[in-house]
Image (cartoon, rainbow, N blue to C red; front, side, top):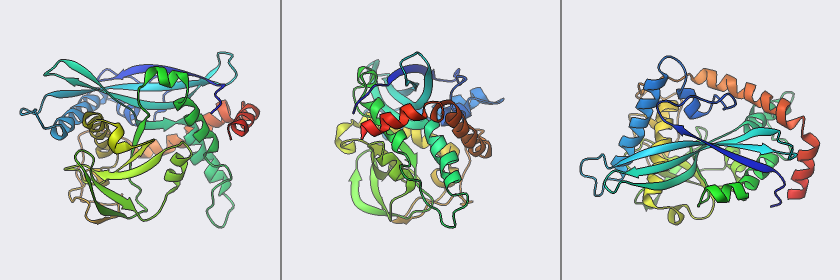
Length: 324
């Protein structure tokens, strides 16, 4: 893919002292936790949950269950469209690193995990609702997700990405509550039991335009399957510890944000439809404002429209057409 845009990568540690940068999307999982009176307890508790889950899944040669700890880095990606030093925050992802306390070695984990993007906010919270405002039936605009997909692919094939990361990203999301998932006979030692959905979703189609395919797995002692978006071969391109880093991190976030699904008291059966109105679930001790999050998505979409989509419309359209 032609890549005339300049991508800059910034890294910041996600630990109990983390404070979101001014241009971080506040709806992003990790940023949402780092606010309010309980910010430090939130962060500490979330990191403890991640480490406990990691050690439970990486149980071999780990009799006391404390061999590993997960270190997280927030990777912020800015794009300079015109090469004039004016950049816009495009993508924010997470990088896991695993510290082995037995060998005192740091093991590189997977980049991706969480995924946030202002342009995606624009597509889903501005473009899509405006397109359907006066429509009798819901429909998707032409070229929906094309620009976003090309920006993502351009970043992943860029020198900036290749210099920073050795493997393609894996993004881990929650399952969709308007689909039914069937358990298959396929089982992986770490990812767990595979599920298959009864149809495709708008999210799947959107991520497909980013060059990512999806598979659904429910790890041991999880309540529900997770959606893994990836390039290549998810089961063979990554080590067990790399996969456990992603599972432990993203399942922890989902337990906090989607407790009805991922902290449910009953485990997903052979046929499973997620239910966000499920009352039979437990809450974590971590404070989180879900309503505020959905309101902010719209604000962030408008921010992208005003600061990126409109000012660079011609350049972006031309670049997108050349990328075809």
